[in-house]
Length: 323
Image 1 (cartoon, helix red, strand yellow):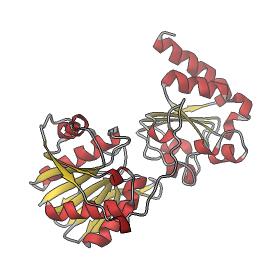
Image 2 (cartoon, one colour):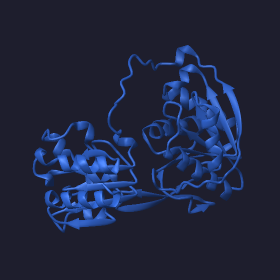
Image 3 (cartoon, helix red, strand yellow):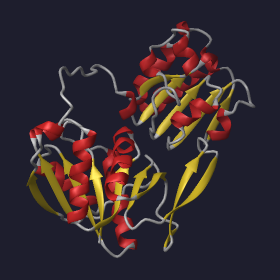
Image 4 (tube, rainbow, N blue to C red):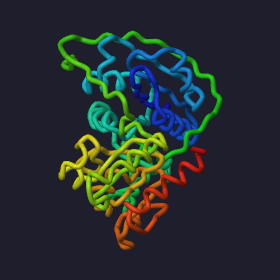
């Protein structure tokens, strides 16, 4: 028996999200009195793979093939399922991001496994196996019992602490054979965003809503994002009005993000918006309406006109940074 954690890479590099799920898998393995095994699919250098050992992985499997550098759900599912069987994994951990959400259901069918999606803590109980997850955009929680022998868990981002263990893990290299007839994903062109922080990767996000009153009032948000090294975002009404590009729209119908800090400026906090940002570690809300729903989801709040408050906030940040 083991805990197998699938570690996604981005251009051969791991992100904080990767270390979160490895830390989680390591602690879960301790509870189950077994080992945590990290599975990397695609080309990743050994120096990068070794980082996984620092967060509790006791063995690292690197499955490589040039075709595996492109995500194909069907191929990846087969690779993960094969190693799960070889390693006797009874728990498989993935991130609750786009990739994890695509792979988990396929793995469930392949391995006849039950799924706990978007879990936020270690299991409440091992026998029976019960996990905790937030529901209704974080307004409630559920205890989910998984009865199958093999269990698949997807971990919500920012829900578990990154824990360094200093462990030195062994690395196994495996060349994977991929049958051409089942490989259906072909990349024809790659376009990468340059010049600004990608919204879904940002640790800090500054987001504006209709409370900004006009697109002409956006420069202070841009300045604040620059001072904090953050990315810009907006609510759906703002993008629908054409004030900001749709690529900045966060929420249930836009981008789902989980930064360490989310500053919502002039955003009322509709259910749809909160659904896209509720995994943020800290939410700071600025709104003129003291009864705005956003305050119920924020750790810190400022009541007042966002347009008047922003310059003062920028001055305070500059003072702290000595600018």
